[in-house]
Structures are given as C-alpha cells and as structure tokens.
Length: 285
Image (cartoon, rainbow, N blue to C red; front, side, top):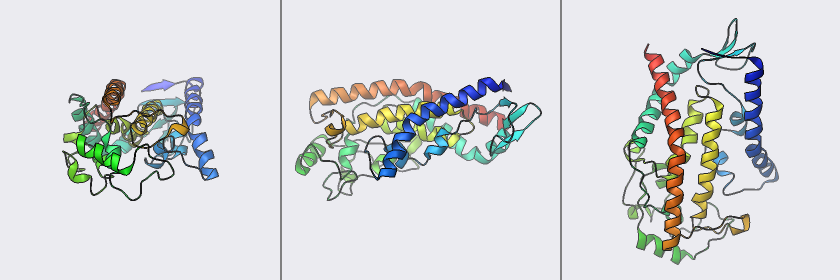
C-alpha cells in the first residue's frame, strides 16, 4: 500500500479538478445556452462519462489517503485513512477488466495501419439525406463526397465507427466488423481505437487513478479535432483548418497525424494494460 499524506493527496485532487474544469466548464456553459460544438462536445455526448464524474478524483488501487474519512462509494475507512475496496471492486469488475485487457494487448501487438485516411467520417454521410452535424456546412457537394468514397474505397475495422455508416456505405467497406471481432480487428493507427482509450480508462475507474483518465481524455480531445478536420464538414468558422484527404497532400498529412497519435497512445495503452494485469493478478491470489 502507498500512503499519501493529506497535503499530497489534496494537492493532486485540486490539480486534477482544475485541469478537468478547463474542459467541462465550457461544455456545461454551451449546454446551458442550448449550443452545440461538433468537436468539443463529442467526448461528453458520445461517451457515457458525465462531467461531474470526470472531475471527481480517485488515487487508484492500493493507495491510502491518510486522514480521509467517508471519501466516497467503494472506499473503506481504516485506522490510517480511506482506501479503495479493491478486492470487492475487482471481483465485480473482473469480466470487464479481462475484456479490456484482451483488447488492449491485442491492439498493442499489431502494427499501425495508416491507409484508411479518415474515410469513416465520409461513409457516415455517404448519400445521406440527413447528417449528424446538420448545423454545419459540407465543404464538398453530396456527389463529390460520394465520388471520393467510391473511388478511394473504405477500409475501417472499428465497429463503433462502422455502425454509424449509412446503409449505402456499409457494403463499400473492405471489412464488416462486429462487436465480437473488436479484439481481432483494432489496431494502433486507428484514431477511434486511440480515442477509446478514454472509454477504457473511465470504465476501469476508480481502480485506475484519475490522472490517467484525464490523460486519455486529453489525447481523445486532440484526436477528435483531427478526425473532424479530415471529414467532409466545413468547420473553418470554428477555426479548424481542413485536412483535404481527397488530395495526395491531405492524405499524407492525415497519415502523419495518425502516426503521431499512435505514438502518443502507446504509453497510455500500456499504462491501462499494466493496471488491468495488476488487478487480475491480485484477484487471482
């Protein structure tokens, strides 16, 4: 057990909350005004982790918060302070931890594929009468979008992107991913697989510390911006310069962004996998 003195854990808690507030406060203000942002709101509307839960700080498994009492659900009070009830939580979460560990390990073991060029976003609007972000204009016509999709083809192995393809676009995908195939298909060059590290982090919370959850959120936030810059949407009025993947220069730029995100995601994926393996090893003892 690691024992954190009151000054140490309170400083970590306050630092985390200040960091998260910079993301959550603008979102909550927009929501109160009835406004939407196609990039900044995504991590709050697509994923299930509420702003209040993201703001809440946890030290992770195996840490005693010296002097703390009634720290919250899933915590035990001891003579030294509050500590997460890791045994009970690990027992309840074991199937989830095992599944996440399998997915993370399989993804990390594969080479990054950098040839999809973000066409998943194009497949989501391919020959569609209505689109998800209808308040924002497209930078190409419907026919031009269709021509790019049909000429380039789509090779998306991420199920949670594929399920938003239009019915007309699904047969054009080189893969037909399912939820069951997720550990067999995900690879570290995929923007959505790297964004999803945030999902796996908060699903492991409070067994992992909140700094790791916030690190994964920060990565996912940056990835979402590139994801939408490479889409057919025109977000120039919001300050997002398009990555024109319909051109050779744009495809090269997108692949470079993918490569950079794959490198940034590598240590976070490993940190999550290490946490899973520690929890599973502890549960087995």
